[in-house]
Image 1 (cartoon, rainbow, N blue to C red):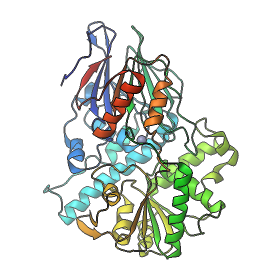
Image 2 (cartoon, rainbow, N blue to C red):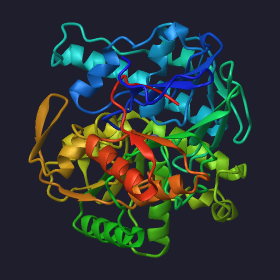
Image 3 (tube, rainbow, N blue to C red):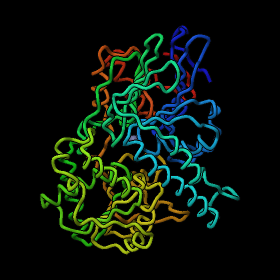
Image 4 (cartoon, rainbow, N blue to C red):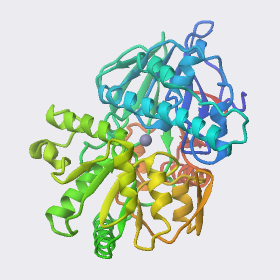
Length: 478
Ligand SMILES: [Zn+2]
């Protein structure tokens, strides 16, 4: 669907088609086609994310990919979160066979994410089949373990700052994104006219407790800017940590369980760092801390390796501390389903479990068992997309539907914003303003409509740059 062309067509332009991550924070997918000579000479996909959240958004995963996957020459992944890489197995199954470029740490994390996603897809389909609560007579998985392995086999790590040619006519470079380990901004330069586009990917805040801040964008004609928190300012981190210490202390003192739904990758490590700090400072009582997510434990090992190997993404202060910075001595790892189920009996403990928006994974079982208990506290520490169980809890739902059953919510629900690893509106504007000279166009994506619109207004007002909030399927020329 060609909805808008901002100006005349030049040979040497790049065509961008926004296939996902528009009007929503999930399903990031942008197609880039450089034009050289007679027409488009290659097709490059930036991110290949899964749609998550309400049924109508998730349903988009089941629609045929808007272009034939076999005609895509290469993929670049900005980072390992599922909403940026989780559709890849389906793309490969449907014909894509090119390289998937990403940073070395993204290449270490993506296999963990995709294997877990395939397993969840298969388990959800089997569960729905058994319990009969799907609308479909024979619910099937979106993709399976074999599809995930085929996608993993295509990963090609590229060092930060190293230039490479993903498709003829385009030079690409990854720089530190500061959002999670391995996260990257992506710079694409069209070789014949030197037109440059920068993709922010998911952008870090610059105060990640473990990672170096995002690199400033290089001079670009256009920037594609995420807007997850485009209409918000993050709360003061120290005040939020105080609140977290108070909430954990009162829950443990009344004998309740603190359940923390957490994204397996990064959020778990950041949480462990915070718990480590609160314990050392004796701001919370000693209690068992359980990490109940095989995926989170696998990701934790990648972070520990990065610290041990003095990876350039890790903050020097954390390298000086060594792996103990996040490797708590009293950590209990729940690896088997039996160990996981044993946690549902409650009691004074802290459970960190995926998924982060409580939309799937083991945490849903803990919530089903512990939400009816007034002693429980659910700490929501990440972005909760509309339609997810996490968002419903945040919005004060009295009951939520888990695995086809309504579960009463009597637990205390507390939101702690200190752990956001997304830049807020001021931080996004500051990152954009650090581009010299300023770009002539900005495309605001990866945000719910209000957040994207608010950020677009700020870009226009504060920086006087032409800005567009693309619609799904919109095609633009830069
Ligand atoms: Zn992300």
